[in-house]
Image (tube, rainbow, N blue to C red; front, side):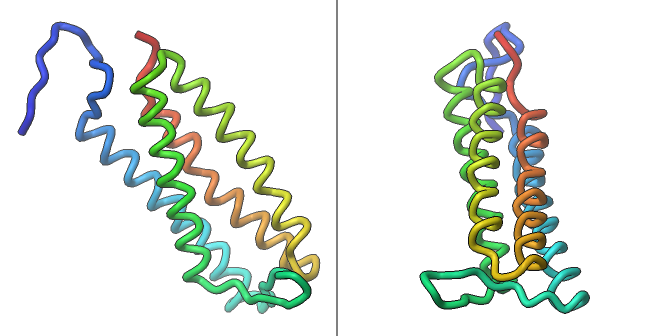
Length: 144
């Protein structure tokens, strides 16, 4: 176990194990939330979840949902870690960037979903995956 003793409450670039665990849990919970939306919508409610891929309909399966949500969560974690390392305003910058990314990402389900039910389901999955944002934000190192 590595221990950093500097006399300061926070050291730039040091991620405490508890914070790392909270961030990993946030990514996993957001991924599970997106998958839960898929499970309720597709197998239970019978929504035919597909996106328009250049004139052809491409079904959206649970694997695609899990991978997309997981990668988005990990990208958010990486962004927050980089911001914490290089700026004193990591929390606020992360929040603004994440909100902008969410707004832009909402264009995809609204324009690419095949049918109203698919558009709604895809939008709900995007919002579910975005649950990682407030969770990661809570783990951010405050102003130093």
